[in-house]
Image (cartoon, rainbow, N blue to C red; front, top):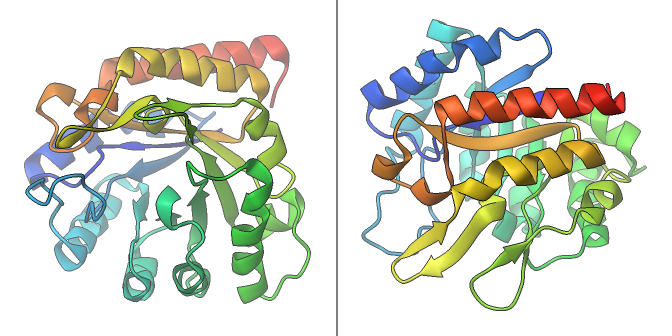
Length: 266
């Protein structure tokens, strides 16, 4: 099972390296295909004064250090087309943010790198609409058929993170986990699914729901999970209200495997 996890944003080096060290047992679990996740730039923060990260150059240096020290595969978001090529030289997965999932130039630039592409489903889109971003990646890589099998071979994933429901709330329709798998392997983003967008100058959330959402997705069946985690979410510089404490992450992963085993999922 694929697990993408780490802090929302690259904070100071010492904090990031401590979090990476605490995730080592998860990376060594033979049942897990592990990826360390963080962002070098949070370009979509609510407030202009919010912490964004170290930027592309310094961020990629820190990711390279993490790869060398821990042997982790690594994943990060990109927001601009020019970021794809340099990020693709270091990162194993390039993640396309939900609100940019229709941006053709960004998708094409990402597809020209050797990285796996994880496309987050826009909060404003139905599942079937995600065929088109997948098609843009596959066509750029010389593939015309859009299916789970072709995307798996070509390194294209889809990530579910809920849909906007009214104002200031996200709701996950578990049917989407099945519908998206027509086009690509599916990752369930359990932490962003509990966001409460733009509550004042920051995005809020309720991390107490994360384990329940993850267990529900495990019961439906997905290819992997995305969790943001931190040693102290209350002090995190981005998305703290949605993030799991590292010890809670381990408990949630254990529950996910128990559900998969009970239902006979691979």
